Length: 228
Image 1 (cartoon, rainbow, N blue to C red):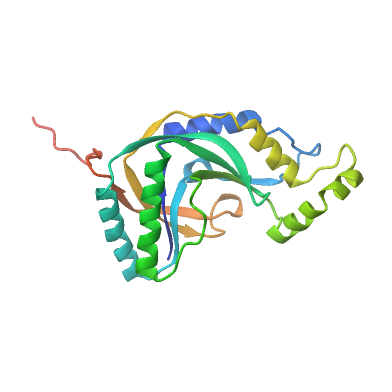
Image 2 (cartoon, rainbow, N blue to C red):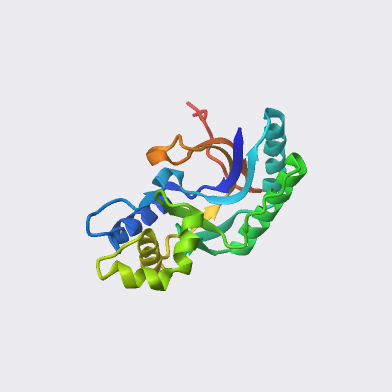
C-alpha cells in the first residue's frame, strides 16, 4: 500500500477555502472554457507531513505505532490557511500561517520515522507547509520547463487571445495571495493510503487508515454511554 501522513483540516476550514476558490476560479480562464486545471476535491485536501510510498503491511503497522509516539510528544497547536503560490509552474497551492514552527517539527519527526521504518528518505522539501488545490491538466513537467525557457518567444506568437495553463495558475495564485482562512487547532495527524488514478477526475483516491491524536487533545467518544 502507498502511504503518507498529513494534517487534515476540519470541514469548516475546507468549506471556507472552497468559497474563496469559487470566487476566483474564472480568473484567467481561456475564452473557450476548456479545463486546464484538475481541482482537488474539497474532501481530499490536506497538508502533507511526510510521504512513505509503497510499504508492506508490517511496515504500515510500524508507521502507525511510530506516529502514535510522535503525536504523543506534541501538544495541539493553532494554524490557518493563508496565501498561495505555484510549484513547478503547474501546481497551485495554498500556504499556512499561525504556529507553522510546530507544524514543521511534527513534519520533521514524521519524515525521520519513514526513513527509519522503510529505509527510504522523503526528499521532498517540507520547509513550506501547504495544501495543493489544483494541477495543470495533461501537461508534463518537461514541457513546462521547455515552455518557460521560451516564454518571451511564446508570448509574441500567442497574441492577445493566446493562453496556456501557466496563465491560469499564475492568475489564481495572484488572486489568492491575500487569502486568509479561519484558524483551527491541529489535534491529530492522519495516516492515509493513496491510490493514483482512482479518484475523481483521474486524480488519486485517499483513504484514512489511522489517526494519531496529539498529547492532551480531546477526541470525540464513539457510542457514548448515557446515564439513565
